[in-house]
Length: 445
Image 1 (cartoon, rainbow, N blue to C red):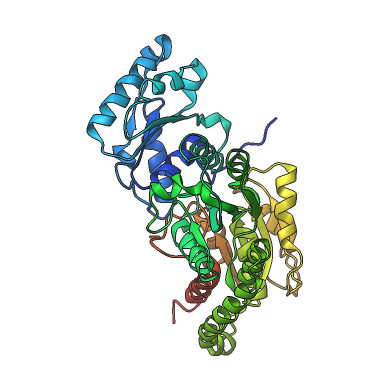
Image 2: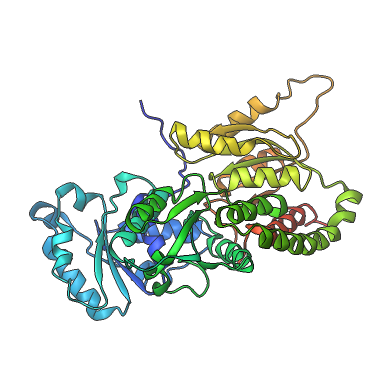
């Protein structure tokens, strides 16, 4: 019997595709799926991503065929053709992308043939297969990027040694994706690189079209974006490296050195690290007094996606001096992916090693906590698991209440915060995470 997922922390592949397109400026998705798919996915990802909103002509304004029983019986191609025409007439965009749901894929609608009828239309109309049964929102992100690299990115452009693309942060699935991309781009630009983030501040579709100029793709994940990077390498001939999302001074220095070694910019990288660390620790010094005077060291339970859990756990152990006792990665991973992620919990400067678990079920976290810490059995003397902080998603709220612990949400779904330009990546992200964690501890003062 397959394991069920209790309160999933992601949408289907179509959801990931839609919110990846929502993050591309003036890219208009045309949903070819059953009635209600687009609206339900918008409701899930909008709130879960810190109230991301629909964006330009997105959310409740998404174009959708809303196929019904008649279309399922007789085929939905005429309905799709009609919807593309009306979308081109009513919605102004610079790129139109037909994305597909489960039902139309199951009945075998020839979406590519319908879209080919609009081959001479400007702006362009393309089709990318994104059936929900092929994975979750992370897979939808890879599907969209791989499809765009195949059909939309220009070919034959000369490579530039100073140009890189950033992949691996899934819009919406990572509520802080835009701030994170902005911070990583800031650091790489200081090294002298031209950086395409695709979904960051000031990006345009022209950046995406010219992405084949890049000589390197930097994937900020051990899993997300890898398939897209492999597709890019096959189509456009640019290699890729996979480096984890860096949080704080130590991890960011490692990230920059990894990029510097790959692009032979080690001297520039070392200068940037010295400058950034001087600024970083000048701010950290401000909280040293209250940290020590009030004793703000804590145990921690960290739960969420594979980008955040290792990075946050290492940050609080190595830089805050906390004790992350349990780390639960909630993504649906195969054994090889889990092995790559588990390696991120070794080699820490603090030599702390949390109990690491991989499980998609929210209810399992409490069980793993009992494994990580012997429960109170009415002994005369008991070393309680306290004081403790939970770092995860809103799904950890019940456990936080049971433990009497504060909760900071950093991983999808993030429904109890408004997220704008906040970042947890890089040096600025480390400062933000420090302020947020220590801030919830002194909130009642």
